[in-house]
Length: 575
Ligand code: ATP
Ligand code: MG
Image (cartoon, rainbow, N blue to C red; front, side, top):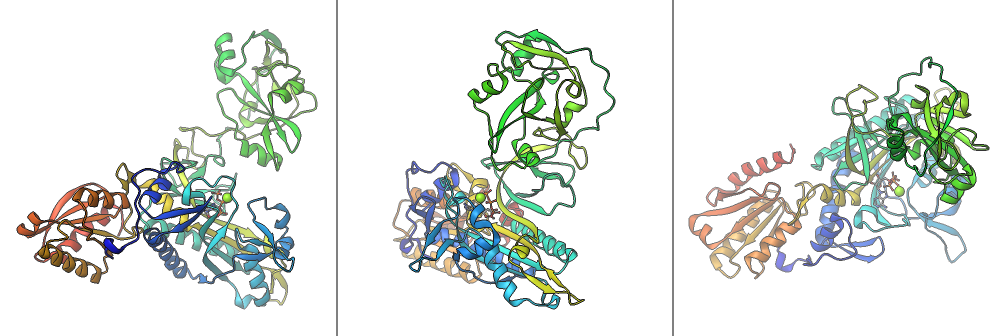
């Protein structure tokens, strides 16, 4: 491709609406353009990157035995009513009525459609297992679609669905997808981590998220440097020894803590460690007040609380609600005598007694509190957020925190959709059974953004070679010099023939403009042909990732180039 005839409108200024670096750079490098909120056109460079990702995903799905299909974007409401999701899927589901007054929606995911397909065709265990996938445009009416391709309303997903006759088969299907995903992200040249997305279960977990590691990621991952344990912060388990016999504690007594609201203030005022204080946090769960207790130096994990009480909606109580519930100003809530409110305590609070807690009275706390004696705690369980350095639940080594972007999810669904939609088959004994399902998503367009979040610098994008729209930018500094043009054309043909996709910058532009654009667009390899180099019989090279410059001889160029290209790829950790 020749840049003089290409459509890659670059921008000098960063568009104000772009908040994250991938969004800024995709716009500036002329890869995407916004049509309306969360909806983008892929320009030639952006589409090439997207297709590069999609092709690797497709190859690995095929290798794992999945079969490609293409399902419709428009789905009838009836199917969603059958699965029960018409009611439960929130406003992300874009619903509309067609000219015949039929309720419909734009597919945010395809469990219903694929289960409907399979239930009409599969009759016998002999037809199982089957794994069907597609690479298709999804629509989700996200509330805040402001991160470009990272969180679009319209986006490209690879979604696969497996159907098995028994549990062992379903587990095998799951792990085959897990392995395919690991290969996909390795082949893409991305640093990633698979994290357990199940709460509680270690080992036997059948839900993993694949995270691309990037300092700008929305998710925090707790991972173990010593073993393969990795979990989203919201799911990471806190390790806690079993409670033993507690020493008796003298009767609780009130202490004055005038104007001391926070744990730090109370600890400093009473001259105790924050570890001796219990934080009482008031929440409203599905309209009902509840209280969560954690040690003063810990943070509550709201997801754990939400799961524990199986709440649909959980929010912190407002200051007015706190005052109404505790009859005291904010900052003095405590578990003793808190009438009508269910108390949930973190498991650590069962290990000791003699706690300091809010007294539900202005300017006062209680000390020598024994939670089992003085309060009505409904349960002691894991409610706190883990912190860096906490022991790994699997091997005990110190956990480390990193940031990541969710790019894929593998999930064992079990019978949820096959039961709801009655997808059955006859087993070996002629007995009717429900198919066991799994679903496996990859955010194809999000990967393009995530790879940029992971790989960029002040000058622009630094594409991993497998994703880069072109592997090589060949910059001709003398577009009006016949000898240079002839040489550039020769190299361009040789590279493309050798399967190295090359973009030839043949524009009549200043060298500075050409170098800036090549850097901005992020091609992994830059080759520069100039008058002086030509005279010396060399072409200049630059590895975009390291910035390292060098030269290759024009005599025997292709061979020398291919050898050097291997080094560049190895630097990316690619085979
Ligand atoms: P998130 O928590 O980020 O909203 P999700 O749990 O809703 O993701 P899934 O339903 O598991 O995502 O979809 C599979 C994959 O599709 C995700 O891992 C993610 O990579 C991608 N994806 C989901 N929502 C979007 C979006 N709005 N824009 C781009 N990609 C998305
Ligand atoms: Mg979502």
